[in-house]
Length: 494
Ligand code: NAP
Ligand code: MG
Image (cartoon, rainbow, N blue to C red; front, side, top):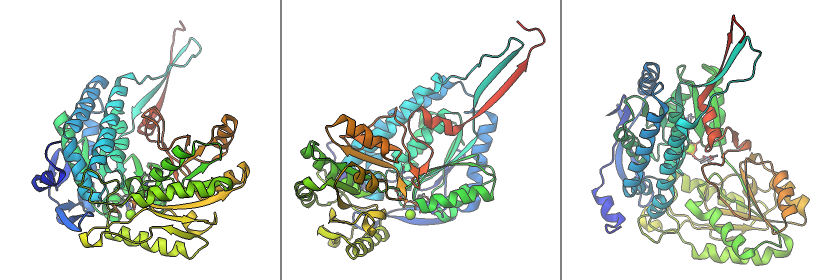
């Protein structure tokens, strides 16, 4: 690009209202979105009250019932989603910049990774719209039975700030492809990209009311969606703690279906026969990319004791060279943590971690404080006891914990020894070992000789306290359909 991110930032004027009934509307209360890069306000954004959420759900319900989207031919829904994907690509700079400003990730990465991901997600589920088949089971000749997939109705989607558009896309695209109407609640730290994304959806031809955005506080707007009697499905990505609330909200309201993509403490297991160069550089990337604010971050590095020194030396060298920088600079490898509160949380966790059977060997203190921003460098704890604080708690920052193992059984026991079960990786050239370890891991996603790889065909989600339900792939559509069984008794067997 010829214009710099800074020049673009000077010109940008973000949308700040709530999107209800196809119009941006101001709500009673507005809150500042603070840029983590310098601690300054980017914009004042309307935050939804319970009443605003009611209006958004009513708008989604009306759109669903009159069929302006739910009863449209699948090929027509496909055309809109495909156009929306194109518009995201065409406006990639603006979407990327909004993410960099609101949550602090490098703008160039937001463009290369997130905007591409959300566009691909829209296009992929757009393509799927007219390729979904219903079922006609074999019955006796005096009956005809149909198993049909009916759109589930009004979907509430509540998402976090770490990948604002990727997470939104993983919920919104399959829900709309299935014919549902959606009310999205972005994280309070990252409403700006969601609002521009939604505006592009309207431009692409989404009928009004089909997609609504209620920026706001989790305990107000998120809770109102979770408790709403007219929301049929609630799909959530965020912390395990808040995931529990959504089960409670559903139990206390209308028993809406709830799907939870929650936290993780993923193990990255390296055996001596692995390609150590690739394994070590990927291990560093897997925890420091996106400032470590990644549910699948490889936050626990498990190395065979015979290669411990070599692997730790390599990862430490990469970590020390990889310092956070202004997210608007084109060579930033890491940006700022999302907020002052989150920076303080990470600092406290590092302090606590250092007191419990772990040795701090790299990083550990905030940097670039003069900027007014919230920067924390790559940080490594070595010789960590597998049940120590820093090996068990999700930091959601650039903090790696390194432990050793003696054999395959111990590697598996340590890897499975947390309450989480989101993702894991194993590095070895031995196929039998790779298969045995991957079969033994209690996780939803397992990588062999890579990390974070995959495409839209592969489901994503966890087990144990990392939640349930799957984003991505055709399986994601199952959340947004109700199966209907119709039995037609024939009077004349044919
Ligand atoms: P969070 O605090 O759980 O927030 C997620 C969303 O829930 C936000 O929109 C938030 O609103 C809302 N929320 C907060 N409190 C609520 C309440 N009482 N009732 C209803 N909604 C509420 O998570 P986060 O701090 O944004 O993100 C970090 C967490 O997300 C980590 O644990 C991470 O592992 C997890 N995560 C998981 C995945 C995955 O796919 N498994 C992906 C990314 C992140 P506010 O913004 O107003 O708080
Ligand atoms: Mg939170």
